[in-house]
Length: 141
Image 1: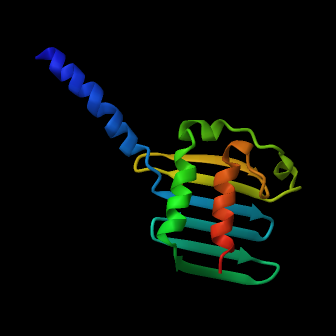
Image 2: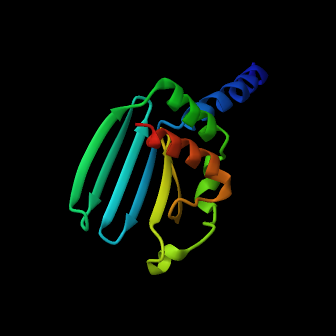
């Protein structure tokens, strides 16, 4: 009986842990002096918030995301080891002295968030495919 419980626990634990690591939301942030852009993407919508003091813009746009676009994002996100994202080094660090826009990408599960910070539009090569997929979706009108 104890053996059966042990085998059952070994079988169920990875399934439950896998459900906990499912990405449910992706958030992008870009910040520089006088400029802020926040993009939140989930399974059914994209919310884009922009504040630009120089151009006097303060806007918010919500639009639907197609199921195929969301599936493409999840395909790329599922290729990543989420626990390793925070430890990724940015290819450059020009944002430290205002030489670049401070950008970040965060992936959210039901219980955690995983973030990577980088300059402009140049994340670590490990997440470039996800970044490219997000950029393509945002560039579609």
